[in-house]
Length: 173
Image 1: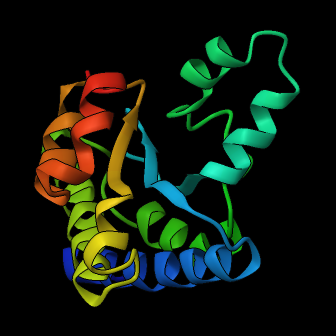
Image 2: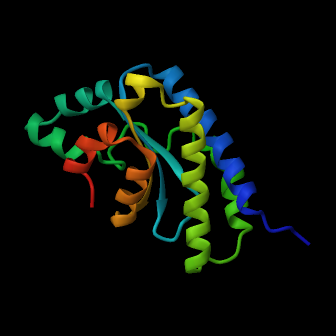
């Protein structure tokens, strides 16, 4: 009989997968990252990493006819990020644990999202996303797609008001 992974098991596996993926991202693509999030579906499937850096955004908008409009559309777009699904191989264990959890009821949905949020909070406390002024330049979050108000609630809990000021104006639900 297969044991059902606990909430702690989920959180621990998400921490390890995210730590590896973010460390690899920052190492392979040095730059000024301003957004880093775990994205999940409205059914709370296994998350994946997405991020944006100033350099990646500048490169993306130079190819567009209307750079100002493109900047506005792309800046917080998880799906358009060149780093969407970055390090997905690190999330195989997370996916396995999620597949062994119960079918997604409202309670299970909340358990999964709370595990993701606690994982990001733990990594933030460790300094994975930077410290001091560097940390204030990056929005970290756990987001559900399609977006809903809970994305904003998590962003507020995971970031200082200074860090999310721009995100709240431009991307919050």
